Image 1: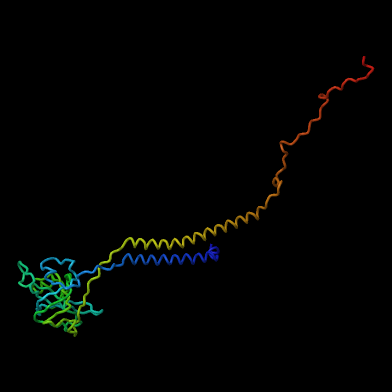
Image 2: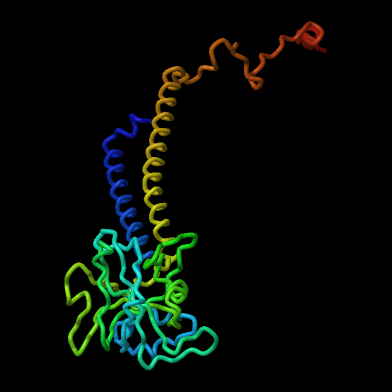
Length: 312
C-alpha cells in the first residue's frame, strides 16, 4: 500500500489533506478561545467614588454587589489600633500590609452588648518589606478614598503574634481592637489632611501603595463554541481519513488488475469449435441415420413376365 501512497497524485492529495486539516485545527483553536473568552464587561459604577455610609451598613452581611466599589469616608485613625499582615506580595516581593483602624464620622452606631459608641472600618494603608518601616497612621481628621473589599477569612490554628494578624479579617480584628466594625475593609488610595495627600502613593518612602484594581469578571464557558471547537477537530481527522480511504481503494484496484492479468496468463483463450481437451466428440442426436438395406423377406415379388406368347 505504501507504493500506492507514493504515487504523485496521492502525495499531492496528502499535502492538500494536511492543508485542509491545518485550517480546521486553526478554526478549532479560534472556537475554543471564543468559548472561554470574557466578553467586554458592561461599564459599571465601581470606579465612581461613593460615600461609604451610603454603600455599606455595619452589622449586615457584605453584599457582593458593592465589592470593588470606590468609596470615600471622613474620620480619624487610632495609632494604637494597627497590625501587620504577613505574606503580602508587591511586585513579586513578600512583605506586610499595614492595616489601621479608621473611625468613620457619621457612621451608624450598632446596638447591643459589646457595641461601641463609634463604628470603625479596617484600612489597608500600604505595603512594607520590613516591619520596622511600618510608620504610624497620620493624625487629625482625614478624608479617605479607597476600594471597598470584603473581609478575608482568618488563618486557623496560627498565632501571628503581637501587633500581627493572619489576614485582613474583620472577625479577627474586632476581637483584637474591641470595636464595632463594618463587615469589610478599605484599600486606601488617598488620605487627605487639610487638602494634602499624606497617603503612601504621594508620600513615598518605604511604604508602598497597594494599587488594588477591580477584580476581573468570572469567566463563563460557552458550550456552543466549545462544541464547535471539537467539531472542527473531527473534520480535520476526517480529511485525512478520506485521503487514506481513496489510497486504499486505489490499492485494491491495483490488486484486482494484477490478479486478472495473472489469470489471463494462466488460462489462454479457447479456440473456436474446440469442445475441450480430453473430451470425446459426440454425434449430434439429430444427425441423419442411413436407411437400412431391405431384406429378402421384405422384397416385393417381381412382376410376372409379359411374354406375348402367354397372352391370350
